[in-house]
Image (tube, rainbow, N blue to C red; front, top):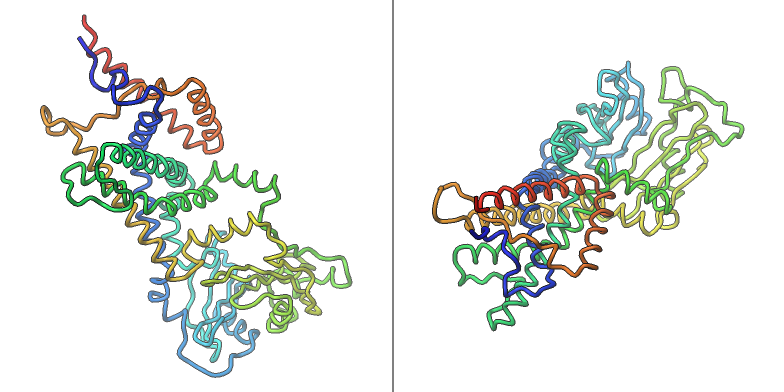
Length: 466
């Protein structure tokens, strides 16, 4: 008795050494088994892309002000916030960047999670406290929740496995699909058929039309998917650690401010000029500190962080805003308000560090503002449609006889044997290297091989004569 179609030798129309069967089988297994992770990442990422815009509406009563006139000294604004929370110590503040924005004063609040700060919003013109929220790295609760949903489904560290699997496989699936679509176009051209890569042949019906939409949409999204995969990997737990080690070894990491005492006459100054602001400590002239930082090239919007230890300097760092390419920073002595250190973005960041910084901000929808967010939303919606059409093709390929719940067959077996021995050895070596650098990709790839072997063994035993 013959074996089923999946286990037959090379079909006559394929060249002896063809990459297509291997890529097809890998694309199939990744699409069926990993696509759910990518689908969830696409949906949650699309929601997160909208967070800054939705946040400005939802928290409009505390983020924006209607009053006009000259702004109060920052010390008075901080004082108003401290009046609302007299038992808490000031950690940092974000002065209003425009006349229509509120000032944020951050407090270390023992009642919150250690990673959170209490943000108090103050009208810079009247000093009126508008409200307060628990924040994480400056993000308000809505953005924090959506960010957690995208990164780890709000399940903590165990949930990050899903996002790392998605980021690790996204580039493989995208490049594999692009290769298969290109091979199909070459084959169609040789057969004198209409060739389309970026458009859909609407004359097609059934599975062929689904394939057209799937392939053309994937090609349009290819560059964005590769970008999202590369930048997403930097946040992952296991692969991200390898990226960090690599950047450190090559001195590609982001430079850090040094706020440690310089050992001068102010090095022993305590409490009031150091540590988070405490009662009874000499007041810090925040406006003077910002003026000193501005002289070093650090401009609004920015965050000023108080010293954490005696003798340390204030740190003043630019924060993200649309179309801002830099994140300059400076340290300021809280006694005489001299600049004790600075980071000049164009001078101190390596080329790779700049690209990584811009990439991360683009991934988060911050680099180009609303345009960036809308682009990410379009990519997310497009990726969802590509995945759904992939599953639809699988369903449309199912046998029409037998069970109504029968599934489509996997592409033919023995793909690795169709490669030249040197190519096969190279692809195995590359898989081992990539699997080491991207551990969850490596583990799931091994899982694919095991599943494939088991399915093949079961199929072979079923069709072996007794």
